[in-house]
Amino acid sequence: MREPVVGTVIEIPQGGGRVRKAVMNCSPIVDNVGRARGCLATFDDVTDLEEKNAELQRALNDLEASRNKIEEQNKELAVMAARDSLTGMLNRRAFFAEMEKIYAKALTEDIELCVIMADIDHFKSINDRFGHAVGDEAIKQMARIIASSVRGHDLVCRYGGEEFVIALPNTTVEKATEIAKRMRRRVEAEAGPGIRSVDGLQMTSSFGVSTIRFGGASVAELVDQADQALYAAKKSGRNRALRWDELDTSQQKAAAAGH
Image (tube, rainbow, N blue to C red; front, side):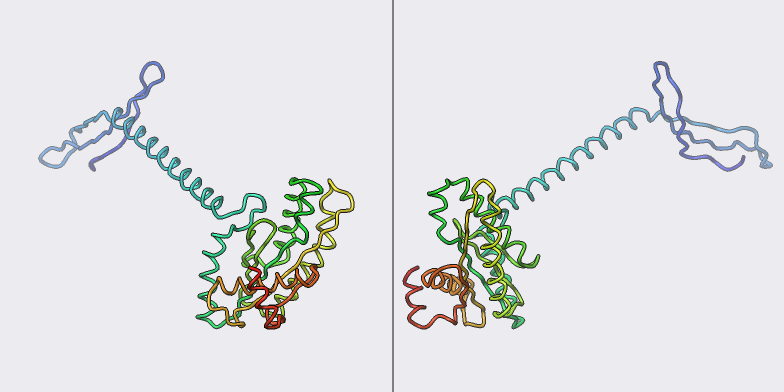
């Protein structure tokens, strides 16, 4: 062999099962006519360096794992901060933060955006008659029906207490009203029987619907219009869904005053 060998790692077994590592470099020794007469070999012990590198790599791996774990925990905390603990829906703060983006997009792209406000009828009497544990179950049943009645990209929020708000981007007010009426029917048919700890419990709900087409100049105003329609639905007998534009001027004023 007349070509040098450079950087070959060899392992040298030691007692006790240890192995030392060395880097071997070999160069041929030739005479004046180019014939190989021998070779010059050097061995550099890199055992300690390898161990230090391995130790450093383990530390880097541990640091990366720790960083990933912290990132996951931060994500979990962010989700927890944005979600209602009872229903898993967005809380009010998170809803408005997301809604501002959707509202701005609806204005920019000239697409319809609807809001539904929903409320459990006579919720206080459920709490008073059966206790807060049953009241919580009623809220969860309502949340389940709402969440399963809308699309994945729609926003669903527990607005407070037994009240909910749903945002439906790129949805006509006619379709939003249809969805509200469907949810109302499902609550009446499913929510009470879904609470198995109380036999024969009947639950109903009321809904208010509005759309950006009705002139709501902000997210808060759009939500308030739906809330006024909800208030009118409850005042006119409950267990119904009303659109904001179905309210006459006196009803709108009375609903606004009632808030």
